[in-house]
Image (cartoon, rainbow over the protein chains, first blue to last red):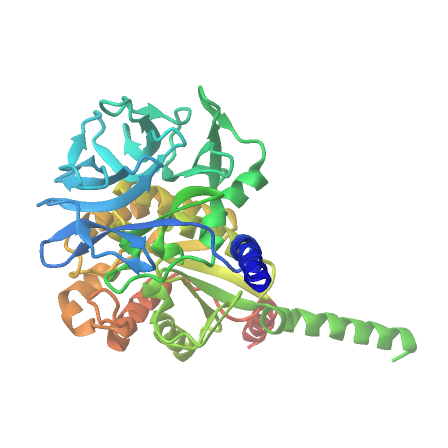
Length: 273
Length: 244
């Protein structure tokens, strides 16, 4: 009887001990994986590109999920020339894409949005500019998409920007003072502390220089800390943790990565790799 | 001769020797071939700050024509594949401000813009950038030459004709020597492509095409080329001729 009771007590005592041990082991492995420096941070990686797979040159999209590139999804169905595509996503599950569609001498911006189930039919942005190219898109921390692009009002391109107001795109606003030189290659990123940063190239003193501006909540501010800005803008392109470029990308010059990590988000042309 | 006379003799000999060799031994006369892959060419073996080494492009033919015709001037290949003109502006500025390479560039051969068209850059912007390259070259007291760009049948949307019209107009307005690569190459372009690129395309020329390019550059350069000999030697030769 005594032995039986002792055995019972022993089992009763052992069960919580084993449970606690298992919990501790699980906790240890969880902590270990959390601090393992070789473990890549959680990434949101997408690709958008122009390619001709037999439908004429169209815009295609793919996302990187479970260590695999998803099959290309055709976003445009255009008889016109389509190019300069950019894509971004926030935390609400929506993915926003924008590209240029050229019809004779006029080029328009076209956009499409996915609510995680299907993509909307592409729609044009009529903004009064004859030329709209090199568009870049970023979704901010409030899940509002921002656009910047090179548009021509007079002779040379200027940098314009716009935001989604819930129903449509706000009218384009020039991001700089009037000038008589080309302004090129706009880039929008979300930096490590959630600020929208806009950069582009402008011609000054006989060469092209990069301009950086930060949205302060009301207007674009010239960023005095150029070194930090340059570091932010180059963080993505210097990362070594990107997934390999998939085989279905034939021309890297026509494709753009979108990367979102803990330190921010932005797009990088594949030609930069 | 007394000791002072010997000193004077040694001194003057040294000065003469330095003068005679300064133009050749210490500083090469140079032509800077500047542009994209159509200048860079194929199978470059090595790249230094002074340009590419090895491979073949138009510079090989141009250099051999210069040597064959007794022009002691070196062609430096500074082509960069895939480059657009906005990047070219900055690169040219940096190349011409270099004080290394022990060379004295006398001419810059500019041929760029086909990648801009590939990436849908506006014609006005390309012409703006080419004009900037001409200004940068002239500010460095170097003579620029500018070429029309060859055809690219693989990309029919590229407005090659439009850009070449702009280049011709720019050359006239700025009084720059125009090098008609397009007119020389276009009629036989099918024979001059594909080149060394993989997959083969109809943008990059083969060796025969590059030879035609080199010849066209040479023919445009020829009327501009300054005498090769050092002025001191010329002076000596001139005085000899006068004595005769």
